[in-house]
Length: 289
Image 1: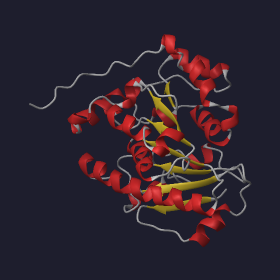
Image 2: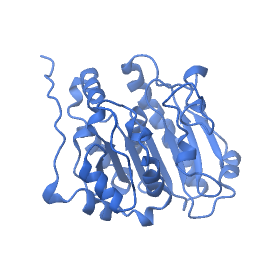
Image 3: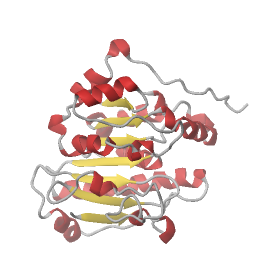
Image 4: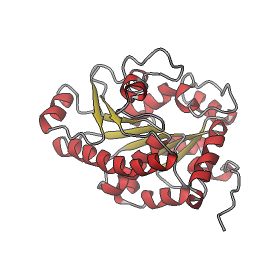
């Protein structure tokens, strides 16, 4: 398994990126993984490269699940890229750093695409990492990113619609993983940025966007019929349920490594029929006077 750790501010040369892709068949994607709040590669105790983005994560934390291993990025299946950025401190600091990280991430995506224009590049991020992934679309051209998986995304609907209208956003396929277990954290995000409006936790209607609500039995039953068995939620509140839930990584693996088996129109037709679509109820927050 090839794992390439890269941090915000790093600018790997062409030789490094070519070497990382050297043994990949044409069908194998580059998968860039993005952590969320409280991680920073600058701090050994909270480095994502010792935690979820590592092949051998630390054993003293129950949330330490190896993303690259569980995504099946072994052998020549795909290149795993662990993107680290400073997401510690106050939430406002992390939100600010997310903007900078997104621009840096876009440069990395463009470097891969320049060296191998036919190579698919996917992004998967949790919480603020999902925000970084989506914000990077501002800086990219159409087709630069194939698929994005957003897990408990720290994103607002209004800004997300704007990002989907960008050339890169209009061409990418976006799978939004959400559920009521994250409702508390969505509420905290809206308290931190009250002018942002509703978050994407309540869903969003766009042709290249799919909401997957893992708290709903009907959605889990539909996914099971499609061959993706995911365990029901165990706790009413869990910000990390979107990647700790048994079976969920097999679904993400199918989305990233086998897109021909998981076409978005099919998933939308099964999971989000227009006649039955509903929106998660979100708490209403008063705007500051």
